[in-house]
Image 1 (cartoon, rainbow, N blue to C red):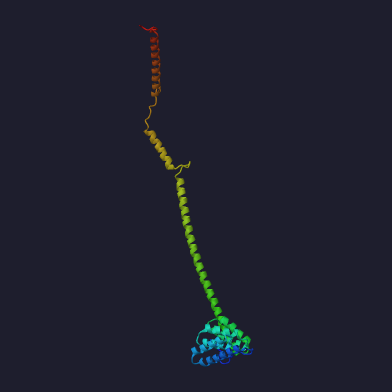
Image 2 (image 1 turned 45 degrees about the vertical axis):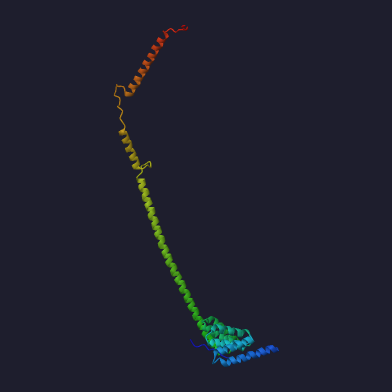
Length: 281
């Protein structure tokens, strides 16, 4: 990139005295001008002493354009761009001269270029040309600032595209991982469902038509047969013979009949006995 042209007019800007001033203001203006002149002499040899002189000028008259502008130039030459920018902005604030505004805006553009703020520098150079459209140096710097701003825009767009691409790649990877996880979950669910169906089918196979477990019904049948087998078998009555129960009933009937006969005999005996009705003395 071509070198940016910097405008230095350390001795060309003075303090405007077009308005009528009172005695105290005139004295302050005179002191400020003297300090600016002193700073202009010291700037080449001793920056620190020159800076102090410019600050004294600003202290005597805060609106001094020369003090702010020249102090801003000295900061720029020493690489203090933040302080240089502030001083040039102060110079613009306190002047109505198009020439002074042009020079301050031109140097503000240079400061912004040093800070890699090319888009803002374009606007500063445009403001400088509005106050002096004939300055070729400002126009040259404006062209450089436009190229720089376009390059920065392209770089920002590229960075944004790369960020979007990285974000999309991460999203795609996450989607693929989520898909794999979902497939794994579905597979496990299918396996569980299949195992459940097999268990259900196996359970149905073990049931009979009434829905009872076959083994249980079988075991129940076996137990019934076992109990039946273990119980003592009553002898079946033979044709023409009384069963034990019939014999027992018959014996009980005979005993009952015999008891009735005996009771009747006893009753008859008691009737034959004469009962005394009088007591013996």
